[in-house]
Image 1: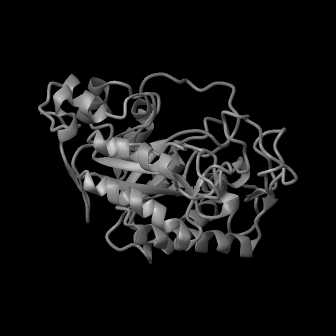
Image 2: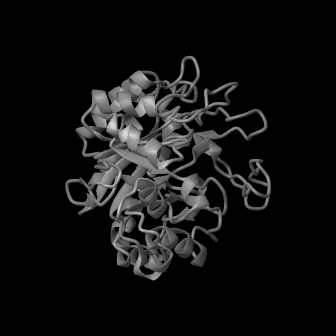
Length: 353
């Protein structure tokens, strides 16, 4: 019996399969507003019977965008276009989540197919970045402004307000993005956080911002499930590591987080990461073993048998796939076929079955 195609009950929602579409930035929004591209992009996964879909990193503030093409949810009039997407996904029988994010020092970039450069405040479409400390990601980047106490509280409030709008739009899942070197991850890691106040130094201080965001978001959640994406390691000496990730998982579980989406890296430049099939799975397995959180595995999981084996070995509870769904939006159908399962296709596509 396939675990990948078995259901998983959360407190308020039920995932019909264990296969989740990861958030994938499209860099195609205008002033943060969703458009037809986002409707078709996310809608195609629902038409292809993906049971759970996570929308790309959606900025809580304009200056929190990775690029000027990022989606945003910092004002009420951004809700209607997102609600159209949510409604379509629900009509196909799928669940949809939103990943709320702030890019911190890694914000203000050009669209990646135009350049990989960070845009200066004086450039068209550029702005001043912020971070826990005035440390740039790389030498060619601008030096971010270190957030003061008022700036930190503005961030917490913005996450709360964006989550409230996400509830209004009808999302089933709210995922807080604390991975890949973006703002919350920058606070977590001692390599990017050199503060000497209550938000820096000790483990308790470095996780403080994230805990405050979780608590604030929880005040506006209704029937939504709260998820968290982390990078379990910086892959660098003296950085955030798996031991701290396990401790964090145990802490956020008590605050109402249901699912932890375990990735790695992104906070500092690396000389070498042992990238190979399943290279991030051991981190998910460790967190699953040492916490009671539902745990998701990501990264170079390319085949149905590979995904099924991870679940059978109890290394994770969910499989998150991004690039595979870009290559084949009907990957849920294909994986079921590969496993020899009689999986229901969309009626409109059954002629191809």
